[in-house]
Length: 143
Image (cartoon, rainbow, N blue to C red; front, side, top):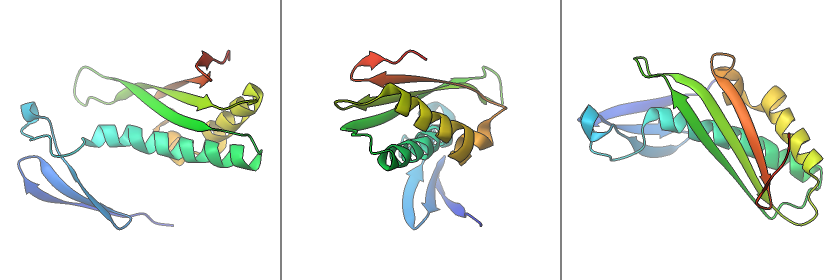
């Protein structure tokens, strides 16, 4: 299996990206010569991680027939101060809402994503430290 993405330079630090038939712009900060025309590549890595684990978790919970009303994945990264300013640690917060949800099933679905299915996380680990938090109906699930 292969994946392909390409970027074409526009001007300054802006590039037009093509991925899976979709096009979007990536750009740098004004301090780096960009004009804020789109997200930056490192941030897209966080979006990729959130999307990968989020799709895993919602798919697994669907198979478990867990009645999720709403679901959000938040990511927060600690970056190195010096170049290359790589990811040192990423916190993933899984936020769920819905009546009658068993937190044990949430923990199981997240563990399956983290340990078996999420290719983005597997690509980043073990070079990046990971931790997660689960919030269910506005309450932190002890873990």
